[in-house]
Image (tube, rainbow, N blue to C red; front, side):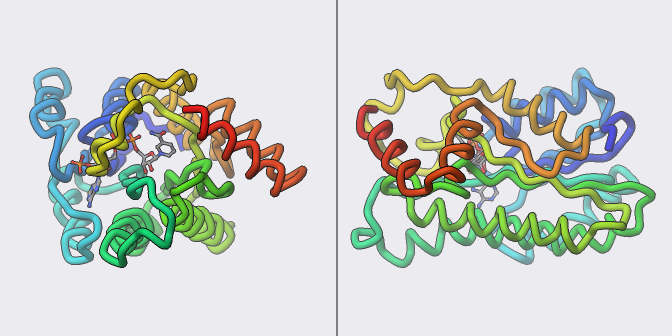
Length: 261
Ligand SMILES: NC(=O)c1ccc[n+]([C@@H]2O[C@H](COP(=O)([O-])OP(=O)(O)OC[C@H]3O[C@@H](n4cnc5c(N)ncnc54)[C@H](OP(=O)(O)O)[C@@H]3O)[C@@H](O)[C@H]2O)c1
């Protein structure tokens, strides 16, 4: 679905990949409803100087179903309709084994990553189905198809997002709503800190990561070209290939790589 003149909702718009999505979508002539949580309001609002009423900001905690269910009406009141949603918001878990995680930490990750995405899809789908053409893009992760050490719950939540999205793609075949799943590898953002996790050395590792700018461009390209799946980054592409070839070996390789960081 070409984004020119379309109304696109972006979650996690306050920073990282989300903020890049917002600016690139506006640059391509889309109208954007930027969903913010705690951060980024000033930066996103400053875009109104350039794009005027083509951008609107909305505050929501995606883990809260009531917050999400209010969004479609709020956004339609501003832009008149909605053509696409990009469910980009997400958090990681503390780098701990399952044995050392408490249920509160587990619940938080599932609530934001899985239930947040689910609430968004369920709340917007009835309207999207009424549009001539519409789109849902969900951001999972390389961790959605491959276990990353000390991120079992994050990976489980992203695996759930991946299956939800692929299931939706199947259900919506032959309708006006296209669906894409995105699995980025490492992207150079503040995801760790924004998730409330203290970790020494994450700013000074040698892992070559994708820029948020490039990740956003690949996500939009995936929507515009109606791709089934976007593997954003060479790490994601290589690990996807290896995982299919030999899942256990792929898991050993990622474990070794992470250990060197
Ligand atoms: N960076 C990577 O290496 C990487 C790799 C694979 C997948 N991803 C995925 O890419 C997506 C974007 O992440 P990013 O790297 O750009 O990190 P980021 O800058 O931290 O973006 C995540 C966004 O999610 C928002 N968010 C968190 N909890 C929320 C909640 N309860 N309600 C609403 N919004 C909430 C955050 O807003 P606040 O900060 O205001 O809370 C933030 O803007 C995430 O889904 C992440 O899992 C990232």
